Length: 414
Image (cartoon, rainbow, N blue to C red):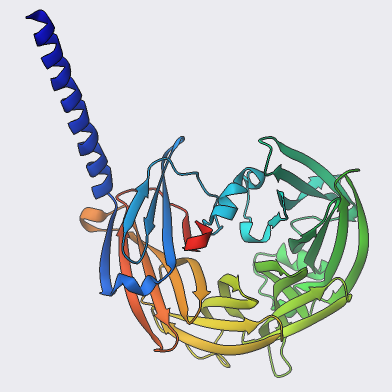
């Protein structure tokens, strides 16, 4: 009798626990909703949208939206900011954890070869009263090892004071023992530094910089020593860095710069450095000091996304529009400039990517009023270049106040 009661009690407990588990699962699932605002989700094609949400120190949920399904991983590997959430990038996250402070565009920080990831970030370290030493912070993660190698390498006696320069760096290649880094910096003029101390000073850009300098370094990973291979100085009044966009592609370094226009003012250009040919050139992007913040590189094609810029040569961008610039990196020519009505309405663009004839984008908006006050909403969109229109737009309600990481990835990148 007691045995039967015990068995029944145990059965009831098991069923109850199972029911609670299912309820909790469905509760969590219902907190992740995708609302199709326009068009069909099948327009995503072979592309998936990933969105991570950090619930706590050890909790990262990841929602995956495909053309016919929505799934949630409650034990996802957490990605890092400003980096597309592909499998390759997440696997290299332990190397990227070197960058836990300041602004870093992670897409310009990671190298990958056959069996390892390498992450590089340049940092200023105090040397003496007037100078700062430029140091490369490096982490190496091997595929077959859990341990991450970490070390700092001085790049020589070059002094970089972050209050006197604007600079960016790009690791361009890695071989068995050597890692190569390209830097571009624009140095403020002494006159500008003195004038800036005056609160009433209203100077022009031409007063700001007196030189722009490109450098190539080689770091030996065995000896942990560096070698300054070359340096090229340019007139800072003719060209200066815009550090929002920099990347490497096929062992070349690319930097977004403002270049003096023959007519008046400055235009947006792409400075290209080929270390093998020791060649520096610029690509005129066809826009005037554009507000380019997001980009992606696919099959030797560069997609640049602008939300605004100085008018004049530029066609005015109305509310909810973005300017897409497609550059063929092989021919170093702009293929076209297109204006996309993405209905972002001032929201931040988190990620863009061109796959085939479609441009995919993720934006974020913040609700300040009403029942959803204090919540972030994520929007995904697909722009078909052949039709010249947005063919799909959806809204993702993650039911959270926390900012997440996002990704636009193909099936083979999951």
